[in-house]
Length: 584
Ligand code: ATP
Ligand code: MG
Image (cartoon, rainbow, N blue to C red; front, side, top):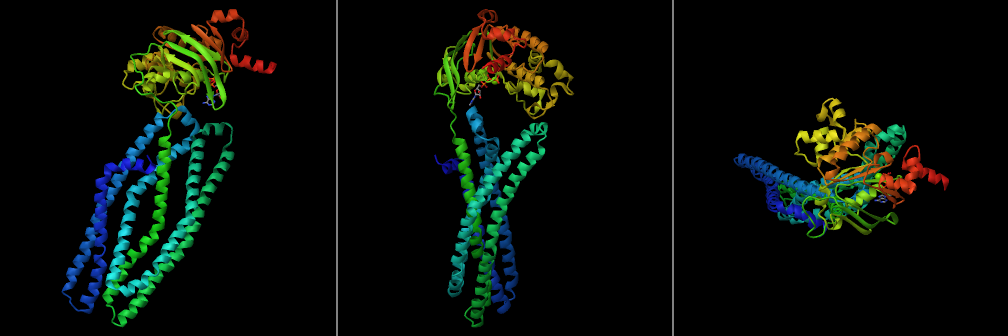
């Protein structure tokens, strides 16, 4: 399907309404013939001919036509405006749904600012096209044809004299648009760049402040801002050059009309009324030619925007569901990684990951930063696909599973906690918005969040800012843990979830989680041994490989990497890893 065909699928619903509106445009345009004609009659018949009795009739026609045209214009404008909003609504919806379907890789490579531009600036270009450009082009074409026909009907000789100017106006429009096209292109790119810059800086303003880099960022922003202004001024410089030329041709047309028409009137070859009528049609001839350039630009903007939106829409997620994907009853939580490798670009991130976990077990994954712990969980949730081997849950390869079914049974407290601008309760209940307050409270207690939530100004109704602003790192982690638990998942993943809470709180959380463990498989990712030492299975990761595995005691007996870390005063893998680096 081409971008335009895709666009048409949204317009199709409004096809008849739009055709009706175009009919109204046609009637309005045709009615535009009448007033100049009546004005001509007013001069010839009433003023020159002395038929004064005609005056009230002609005045009523003039006013009547103006009123009818205004009403019709209002009607078709409403239809176009409403249809454009309808088209936009469904298109925005479709794109948004698509964005939510996209996988991690998509968000890794697309800038947020660009994706926002798709939903805002590009969508607006489409709205403008449906609401205005369609009828403006149609109306101008009709007016132009009508004016041409009418002028020729009134007086062929004068019409021929005037038509000579038209190719020059058309040529000027052509050159204007040709020259301005790259400038408009530049404006659009620069605008997108400015948007992205502003968006990143607003999101990252805490880092900017922490590093006291305001001046540096303002300077960078000024550069972007300057470039945008320069792009706008560049385009202005081009189109303003053409204004005097258009004015010249417009005045020339008028001068020809007055000169040739005047001579003809004096020589009695044409009536004054006809001259007046032609004068009335003059704008209908001139205006479309002048508008042509701008409308061409609007069309180009529209085409580019549809193409951009469509290309974003068409990006196929790497993670796909097979036909008839597996969807069973509740997942039990038996997990098997069979010789799994994962490569990103050309980097081997995980090598030969092989382990089995039974439902109800707790697995600790430990290793230095960057060793691949989170990646293992990303493969389990199928945020990425393995490059070799298999990940199976209850004996079914995750690649064969329905994605919603799979993820619905996993409760993940991510390492990079993200909270929505909503109440604490709303954030915890995110996975099950219809749950009762008691359930929210229950999981908040398990996550050791209940007490601090009660101390907040409005307890569970306290609104937390974007990304959880206003909460400490540990508080955010505990809310995120409660959110993961509320889903009542068969598999719980806690990725570094207690790294920012003190040891005592951590052990309280672990105890509470321990009571749950019978019902579900729990993965605990951590840097410190204290966080995972009670796990049924501990996987020790180093540089993308499982270098040791077993329970705490068996690992200590091995007297290997785990043992070394445990005996180190901090019991943290990162410290040992950096010591190893130092020794190398
Ligand atoms: P930490 O303890 O700091 O959270 P981790 O063990 O969870 O570390 P991972 O996030 O799994 O580490 O990352 C392991 C390595 O893989 C890192 O070097 C990271 O840069 C790389 N990596 C992870 N995902 C991708 C990806 N999508 N594309 C490229 N590289 C990736
Ligand atoms: Mg990680």
